[in-house]
Length: 343
Length: 281
Image 1 (cartoon, rainbow over the protein chains, first blue to last red):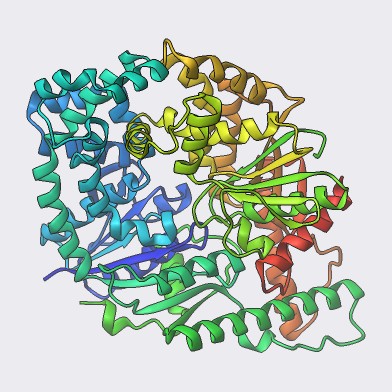
Image 2 (image 1 turned 60 degrees about the vertical axis):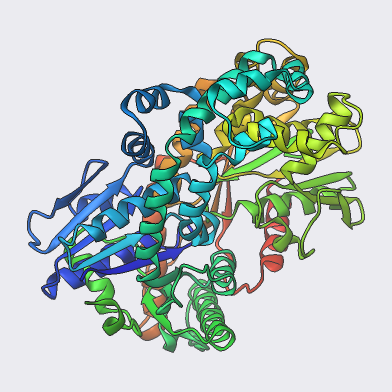
């Protein structure tokens, strides 16, 4: 069976780098591993051997057990239409301006695409381990609620509100178009817009059964996956990590660990610089010492308050650009519960 | 920075845009201006940085002269329908509002004009000297700033169209509106900020943005490296500044804010940033 690890956390904390590092570690331990990322930095993408966006996993040239895939959320959204709608409806949807807008702006869009793709890879049973670098929206919570939100979106909720009645067919809708409410909407928006939106919603509605069924499959994969939360000790990302623990989504397992990136060595705390040092160096020492103390306090508080297992990754001046660089990240880490993550 | 009526603060997630927006609002308040600070995103960081607890749609005075509110689309919509579109009683006509809201989800320019529209009505209402917006991240800001112009294309008739025009004009007027992009001297925020700058220039819906690089470390002016732990600290500091310089060269910022060491709470961070902005101004 394929093991799945979902890596969540705020943007900018090094979540993608950590996901890739975890994948390299597993691959080097002989585990067939796929890492799925969204929008990685160019240097990282080339380190894990992918240079094109695409839903197809690409094998690494040198590391036999390592695959990587980068998601293109717009393409994934199109795939939803292609998979769940009749061919002519799917084509009409893909060309529809509202469909394109919805794929860009529906809040759960990128999360849904990522969850859908990840579930496809897990179900393929080609890999022993699938590591998913989840999109950061909603503090990582969106990723878990996206399948339900998507089904709700296409399920006609919008349409019911517009028509005020049960789910109509196309003719029914136009018969009812004289309702006063719609007349008011026409006055404000112009009837053209309303009609175009309605046509789009009716088309979208035809994908409902497929999307709902698929949503249940995706949710099963999420429910069986291990979860990791990545953060730094900075106030803003830490707030997001707290939010994830407090509002733990129904579909998420209790995180195996919260991983504090950019950790400073414990011995830097409360360093008393030699009074003979140049003043500037003394000030730098005080600053980093204060930062070390703050980090340790933040980790301790988090662990005490949420009963979380805490792991750390040392602060590196620049992101790794090679497989060995990625591997060295996990080698220098402390507290990662490998036995819960590796198959 | 405070001579505009509307300051929209954006940036990639995690760069500290809420802290900068809050710092700016606090600075304006200290200058005796009547300030409205707006949290655009649910769970946005403005309320955390102001230390106010949950904000409401109705602006609340959180410090003398400083009001804060959060954007609630359904409330903005009801207000829009009843006050701006002069559809009396629409506020009580729940199903209509919900239908409109549903429509707005499918036609995002409609959705966004309701929220950016609320902000622009506040700018126009003359209750504030400056409105500071903790806006959505750079990835989504385009659809908000473009909304009034898009509506003009999307909606060929109707009252919304007429209003969309003055909204577009307010955003595009560099004497009225300032877009502020917060970034970090790192790869992804730099790339995304450069893309935003290109987009702004091409779209022309708002004047040239002001770029603020956050968490910039001061270069070490001393060449020697002491032994032991302090030496390790100095080495890390030097390596970090070298990495940062690479990205600052790629995207020279209009202003820089320093890395803040040893701070615990969002409130402390915002207060420091406010002082730094003051010193820069």
